[in-house]
Amino acid sequence: MKKLPTIPLERLILRPFRIEDAKVVQQLAGDPYIAETTLYIPHPYEDGMAEQWIETHAHNFHEDRSLELAIVHKEEQYVIGAICIGCTRKFDHGELAYWIGRPYKNNGYCTEAAEGIVRYAFDELKLNRIFARYLGKNPASGKVMEKLGMKYEGRLRQHVRKGGNYEDLVYYGLLKEEYVSENR
Image (cartoon, rainbow, N blue to C red; front, side):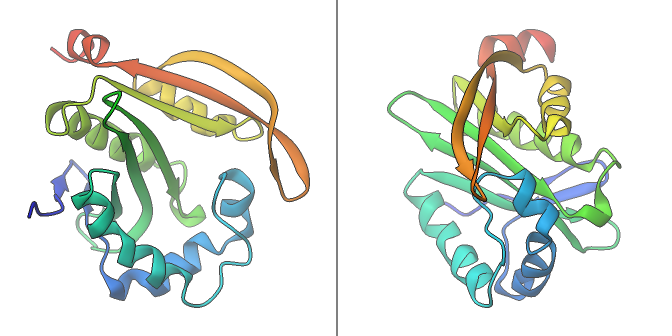
Protein backbone atom coordinates (compact mmCIF):
# COMPACT_ATOMS: atom_id res chain seq x y z
CA MET A 1 0.00 0.00 0.00
CA LYS A 2 1.40 3.39 -0.97
CA LYS A 3 2.28 5.82 1.77
CA LEU A 4 0.92 9.35 2.02
CA PRO A 5 3.73 11.67 0.89
CA THR A 6 5.57 14.39 2.74
CA ILE A 7 6.60 17.29 0.51
CA PRO A 8 9.37 19.56 1.83
CA LEU A 9 9.28 23.15 0.56
CA GLU A 10 11.32 26.27 1.29
CA ARG A 11 9.46 27.47 4.41
CA LEU A 12 6.82 24.77 4.73
CA ILE A 13 6.29 21.04 4.86
CA LEU A 14 3.21 19.40 3.37
CA ARG A 15 2.68 16.25 5.42
CA PRO A 16 -0.11 13.86 6.31
CA PHE A 17 -2.40 15.08 9.06
CA ARG A 18 -2.06 13.33 12.41
CA ILE A 19 -4.95 12.79 14.78
CA GLU A 20 -3.19 15.07 17.28
CA ASP A 21 -3.60 17.91 14.71
CA ALA A 22 -7.38 17.78 15.17
CA LYS A 23 -7.51 20.42 17.91
CA VAL A 24 -5.64 23.02 15.83
CA VAL A 25 -7.67 22.11 12.72
CA GLN A 26 -10.86 22.72 14.68
CA GLN A 27 -9.51 26.01 16.00
CA LEU A 28 -8.32 27.31 12.60
CA ALA A 29 -11.13 25.93 10.43
CA GLY A 30 -13.65 26.93 13.08
CA ASP A 31 -12.93 30.61 12.45
CA PRO A 32 -16.08 32.07 10.83
CA TYR A 33 -13.83 33.75 8.23
CA ILE A 34 -12.67 30.33 6.93
CA ALA A 35 -16.24 29.09 6.64
CA GLU A 36 -17.27 32.29 4.83
CA THR A 37 -14.49 32.05 2.25
CA THR A 38 -14.56 28.30 1.51
CA LEU A 39 -17.26 26.20 -0.07
CA TYR A 40 -17.42 23.15 2.19
CA ILE A 41 -16.12 24.11 5.63
CA PRO A 42 -19.08 24.51 7.99
CA HIS A 43 -19.60 26.89 10.85
CA PRO A 44 -19.75 26.03 13.65
CA TYR A 45 -16.95 23.49 13.25
CA GLU A 46 -18.07 21.08 15.93
CA ASP A 47 -16.16 18.72 18.22
CA GLY A 48 -15.19 15.50 16.47
CA MET A 49 -15.41 16.89 12.92
CA ALA A 50 -11.66 17.32 12.53
CA GLU A 51 -10.95 13.80 13.80
CA GLN A 52 -13.51 12.32 11.40
CA TRP A 53 -12.05 14.28 8.49
CA ILE A 54 -8.44 13.30 9.29
CA GLU A 55 -9.42 9.63 9.55
CA THR A 56 -10.62 9.67 5.89
CA HIS A 57 -7.31 10.82 4.40
CA ALA A 58 -5.39 7.54 4.14
CA HIS A 59 -8.37 5.71 2.64
CA ASN A 60 -9.03 8.51 0.14
CA PHE A 61 -5.37 8.44 -0.94
CA HIS A 62 -5.24 4.66 -1.27
CA GLU A 63 -8.45 4.72 -3.31
CA ASP A 64 -6.83 7.38 -5.57
CA ARG A 65 -9.60 9.88 -4.72
CA SER A 66 -7.65 12.64 -3.02
CA LEU A 67 -4.46 13.73 -1.37
CA GLU A 68 -5.08 15.87 1.72
CA LEU A 69 -2.07 17.28 3.52
CA ALA A 70 -1.36 19.58 6.42
CA ILE A 71 0.49 22.80 5.66
CA VAL A 72 3.11 22.98 8.40
CA HIS A 73 5.61 25.72 9.20
CA LYS A 74 8.97 24.05 8.57
CA GLU A 75 10.97 25.50 11.47
CA GLU A 76 8.30 25.83 14.13
CA GLN A 77 6.38 22.65 13.13
CA TYR A 78 2.88 24.08 13.66
CA VAL A 79 -0.10 23.48 11.35
CA ILE A 80 -1.20 26.60 9.50
CA GLY A 81 -3.72 25.16 7.05
CA ALA A 82 -4.68 22.37 4.68
CA ILE A 83 -4.24 21.63 0.99
CA CYS A 84 -5.80 18.97 -1.21
CA ILE A 85 -5.87 17.57 -4.72
CA GLY A 86 -9.11 15.68 -5.38
CA CYS A 87 -8.53 13.26 -8.27
CA THR A 88 -10.81 12.05 -11.03
CA ARG A 89 -8.72 9.30 -12.59
CA LYS A 90 -11.16 8.67 -15.45
CA PHE A 91 -10.17 12.09 -16.80
CA ASP A 92 -6.69 12.43 -15.23
CA HIS A 93 -7.59 15.72 -13.63
CA GLY A 94 -7.57 17.02 -10.11
CA GLU A 95 -9.19 19.80 -8.14
CA LEU A 96 -6.91 21.94 -6.02
CA ALA A 97 -8.38 23.21 -2.74
CA TYR A 98 -6.78 24.94 0.24
CA TRP A 99 -7.26 27.07 3.29
CA ILE A 100 -4.85 28.95 5.52
CA GLY A 101 -5.67 29.91 9.11
CA ARG A 102 -6.35 33.62 9.46
CA PRO A 103 -3.28 34.31 11.68
CA TYR A 104 -1.03 33.03 8.86
CA LYS A 105 -2.55 34.83 5.86
CA ASN A 106 -0.63 37.26 3.66
CA ASN A 107 2.73 35.55 4.10
CA GLY A 108 2.80 33.70 0.76
CA TYR A 109 2.25 30.36 2.50
CA CYS A 110 -0.76 29.43 0.39
CA THR A 111 1.09 30.06 -2.87
CA GLU A 112 4.14 28.10 -1.69
CA ALA A 113 2.01 25.16 -0.58
CA ALA A 114 -0.03 25.21 -3.80
CA GLU A 115 3.11 25.25 -5.94
CA GLY A 116 4.38 22.20 -4.04
CA ILE A 117 1.23 20.12 -4.37
CA VAL A 118 0.71 21.10 -8.02
CA ARG A 119 4.25 19.93 -8.82
CA TYR A 120 3.54 16.67 -6.98
CA ALA A 121 0.21 16.23 -8.79
CA PHE A 122 1.77 16.57 -12.22
CA ASP A 123 5.04 14.71 -11.52
CA GLU A 124 3.91 11.92 -9.17
CA LEU A 125 0.15 11.57 -9.62
CA LYS A 126 0.59 12.00 -13.39
CA LEU A 127 -2.41 14.30 -13.78
CA ASN A 128 -3.00 16.09 -17.08
CA ARG A 129 -5.02 18.99 -15.72
CA ILE A 130 -5.57 20.75 -12.42
CA PHE A 131 -8.46 23.08 -11.80
CA ALA A 132 -9.54 25.15 -8.85
CA ARG A 133 -12.52 27.29 -7.96
CA TYR A 134 -13.26 29.97 -5.44
CA LEU A 135 -16.25 31.81 -4.10
CA GLY A 136 -16.58 35.11 -5.95
CA LYS A 137 -16.33 37.03 -2.69
CA ASN A 138 -12.83 35.62 -2.07
CA PRO A 139 -10.65 37.09 -4.85
CA ALA A 140 -7.48 36.52 -2.79
CA SER A 141 -7.85 32.82 -3.59
CA GLY A 142 -7.92 33.70 -7.29
CA LYS A 143 -4.64 35.59 -6.88
CA VAL A 144 -3.02 32.37 -5.65
CA MET A 145 -4.34 30.55 -8.72
CA GLU A 146 -2.94 33.22 -11.02
CA LYS A 147 0.48 33.01 -9.32
CA LEU A 148 0.46 29.28 -10.11
CA GLY A 149 0.02 30.09 -13.80
CA MET A 150 -3.57 28.90 -13.84
CA LYS A 151 -5.81 30.38 -16.52
CA TYR A 152 -9.21 31.95 -15.87
CA GLU A 153 -11.88 29.62 -17.27
CA GLY A 154 -15.12 31.24 -16.23
CA ARG A 155 -17.61 32.33 -13.60
CA LEU A 156 -20.73 30.37 -12.73
CA ARG A 157 -23.10 33.00 -11.42
CA GLN A 158 -24.99 32.21 -8.20
CA HIS A 159 -24.01 28.59 -8.69
CA VAL A 160 -23.91 27.54 -5.03
CA ARG A 161 -25.65 28.48 -1.81
CA LYS A 162 -23.54 29.16 1.26
CA GLY A 163 -24.99 30.44 4.50
CA GLY A 164 -28.33 31.17 2.87
CA ASN A 165 -26.77 33.30 0.10
CA TYR A 166 -26.22 32.41 -3.54
CA GLU A 167 -22.58 32.74 -4.50
CA ASP A 168 -20.64 32.80 -7.75
CA LEU A 169 -17.94 30.20 -8.37
CA VAL A 170 -14.88 31.32 -10.35
CA TYR A 171 -12.88 28.62 -12.14
CA TYR A 172 -9.21 28.45 -13.09
CA GLY A 173 -7.28 25.62 -14.76
CA LEU A 174 -3.75 24.53 -15.60
CA LEU A 175 -2.70 21.88 -18.12
CA LYS A 176 0.39 19.76 -17.62
CA GLU A 177 1.87 21.03 -20.89
CA GLU A 178 1.47 24.63 -19.68
CA TYR A 179 3.04 23.75 -16.35
CA VAL A 180 6.00 21.99 -17.98
CA SER A 181 6.68 24.87 -20.40
CA GLU A 182 6.52 27.47 -17.59
CA ASN A 183 8.69 25.51 -15.13
CA ARG A 184 11.63 24.38 -17.28
